[in-house]
Each structure stands twice: as structure tokens, then as C-alpha cells.
Image (cartoon, rainbow, N blue to C red; front, side, top):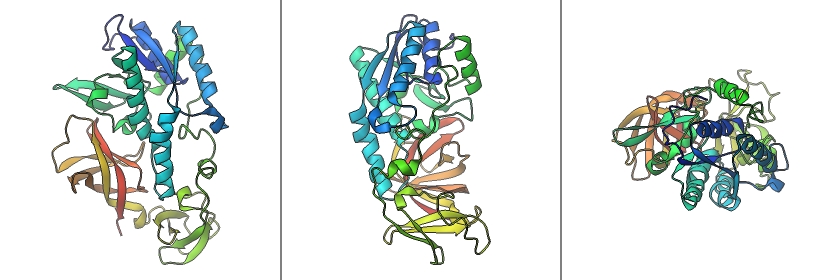
Length: 372
């Protein structure tokens, strides 16, 4: 598997987070072939009796066991369900109930994969940890830098924007310089039993089921008016928690074609009146964010950058982003000016900051200001 470029010593112990998917399986195979003493660990972060759908933890575990059997490795399992519930899922529910659009994958990386898993590795006496993320880490000038993955369609550095120096110094991303098609081909050549397993989609604890159906189990419906920017009522929503800015589908007003005749999009939420605000047309200026404020900043370096910071800001996974100017508004709040404005930016999501291919860190979007 051409493992010569991996920065490990022969016989070095490496904990590999094995999920049951092809990416982590190839990661384990590459490290084994490079001479590492691979310690695969399967993390159970969600109780499968609560999933009730596709891609259950039991199925993931069976795939991970099959991979380890094929590679002649001993799989360890660890249950982080309690930690995941307390640090990822409950904050997700609280933010959703408050009308925000949280990104639990960012918090899962910070709290679980690069938090609890690292502490578990410490208990095993292992310093290096590898995952199947499409990202890269390089050391330059005495600092470990988080870089984008080489496959632009799979780059996951956005989700790692809250991972700091201590974790980056220990992290290995063996597939970060490969494309997904290359990883698939490597898995097939190695005859890994999950080489053709489909990629997982959606939020990990929801699986393939509809998001609204899942969320309704935890947040009760709270119907309210759907209104235009001019205050005209055009429908009824089931709860602000079930909608996000920029959303088009699922509004129940598709047949109403007043004004320009274009589709309707969520343009805002009036929490005080429990009203969902909509605008017509994807090009409506209310859907384009010119400036935003973001809180809880976290930096991948050992200290915050110098301000004002000129960088590239990305407000959603696989989003193109914008040139930006970032200035502090106190110790825990940032002002981010976007040029050009970004479409459908939602409070609760993460904004990640880049200098060329390096991810400098990120913050949680608090408020947005549109073009109009």
C-alpha cells in the first residue's frame, strides 16, 4: 500500500479508530504494512437500540471485526456513549431547540475522537493515534499544521477546526494525501471485506433516516406562522427547530407562487414570535450573509493569530467560502467580514478559517447580517 511516507518507526504502537468503514480500514492496513504495531479500537458512541435504522453500531462493529480478522489484528471496543450524550448530543438538542443549526460532527471530533480516544490511548501507553480522516498534518517551524486533504471532494479539515496542537502532534491521517477513488482501489487490492461498503451519510446518530423525523423524538412540535419578509402569512411550520436558513424543501408552501413565482427559502427565524421568515428566489439578498459574529473561537496553533486576520472563511462543509477579514469583539467573540457574501449561513454552524491549504481554527456562528 506504499506506506513508506508514513512518519512512524518500525514496531511503533498506533491506536487506529476503526469505524467499520473503508477509510479507517485502509488506514489500519497502511499502518500495518508500514511496520506499525496497530491497536484497532472501535468506539461505540451511540446505543444501537436508539438508532432503530440503517448502519447500526452492531453492523459497524461486525464490519470492523471482519477487517481485523482479515488483517490479523486484535480489535478493542470501548463505549463512549455517555460521554457522547453529555458533550455532543445534549448540546446539539439544546442548540436545536433554541432555533440554531448545530454541527455535532465538529464537537464529536473535539470531544470524542480527539478527546476520549486520546485518553484511552494514554491508558494503553500509546502516543500515536490514527483515523481515516481526509486531512493532513505537517510540522513546520516547530508547529503542527492542519492541512486540507488532497481530495477536494472529501477534505474533512473543516470538521477538525477545533483540534489543537497537543492532538495534532500525535495524530496520523494516512489517507489524507489520497483521493476517495484511490482509497477504494487500495481496499480492493488488499481484499478488505468492506472494500465496497457504501459511505455513511448524514449525522452519525441519525443515520439514513429523515432528520426531522429523528429530531421530533426529542423536541416536541411547536407550530407557528410562516411569513414573508413583508409580514404576510403564507403557511404554518411545525417548529423552528426543524428548519435552517437557506432551506427550500419541506416548507409546505411549494404551491404558492406569488411575487416572482420563484421557490421559497428560509431567510430567518423570529424566535420571540415563533415565526419562520421566508424569501422568494435563491438570489434574494436576505439569503446572502455579508458579516457574521462567531463565538468560542478555537485555534489549531499554540496561540491565536494576529488580528486583524486576513484569511479564507468557510461557513459550511464543502462550501467554497470567501476571502474574509476577522477582528476580535472581546475575548470570546469575532467579527467576520465576507467578500463575496456567503449564501444560507446559519447560526450554530461552524466557520473555519484558512490560510491557503492550512486550517487555522474555527468558531461557532452566533449572528449573521445579510446584504439588504
